[in-house]
Image (cartoon, rainbow, N blue to C red; front, side, top):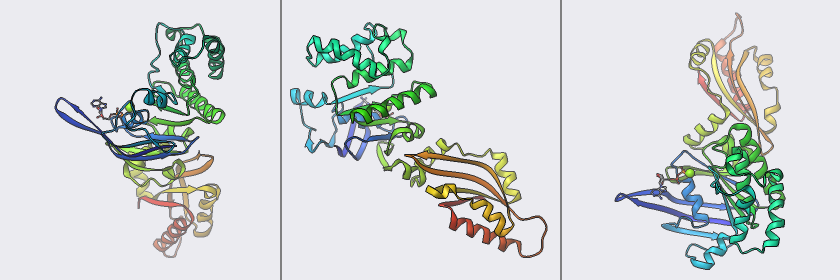
Length: 344
Ligand SMILES: Nc1ncnc2c1ncn2[C@@H]1O[C@H](COP(=O)(O)OP(=O)(O)O)[C@@H](O)[C@H]1O
Ligand SMILES: [Mg+2]
């Protein structure tokens, strides 16, 4: 549906060249919600804006439904843009217009007849849950309501694609979740393909099926969101993911825990997340397992479990301790999806 092929975008400002996007390639399927994640300045917005050619790539091609649109101008370009809606972090509403007028304006620009506009705008406001706010001005709306107007406006002309540039970054957690739910619902009901930018993995994982990770203008990895969470390949991605899991132990705990035994971080994928592996360790090897931190996340309805635990020798007993601990570790290693020894 959307193919970005080897896209580079450079800007020249104050005689200095900024390489905002470097040789980025993406392929987005019809009907999916595709995420782009990365730190501020990574080039996400610039890359997103090449899709409707608000930004012209310096190199590379933008292909929509098999048609190369990179070089389009004038009426042909406007026609392509009409098939692509966009929403923004700061909503970009017209402040002197009501919610109704903000949405109606898009339809007027597209040359829709007045009758149709009068019928269609209330439908759109209803779809985004703002049936009773048609006469309200942006200043009278909450952040979440403003974004709902933004969404109604963006889908007014039945676009095939919706570009979402940090649509929840200015919103509190709860409102953010309700906007993401609305986007998912629109994706399901209307089949609109969505590209969602965020600097937070926690946003991406809520509704995206696939994700591309950007760093310093380049795409450093991409794939199924569940797989990226389960096995991030790049250190930068791992940081993003761990931040979401919030599994950092306080330094003090790390040190004291390490003194008493072996500190383990375990990853459980799929049905493994539901197996009683640790009680098995206690039973078979007599080791004690002290869980310090744990969490199961469901991503695309598949579980990922992460746990930090302290493996300790049994209380005084004969026999060879180190070999027991070694056996227990081997057993754990063969039972979990991934084992990391944080401190031995
Ligand atoms: N119009 C522009 N002129 C000059 N530099 C720009 C322009 N737009 C973006 N940049 C630069 O390109 C880089 C990527 O910006 P951007 O795509 O906005 O990143 P992100 O959306 O990931 O925060 C940044 O260094 C930014 O300063
Ligand atoms: Mg941006």
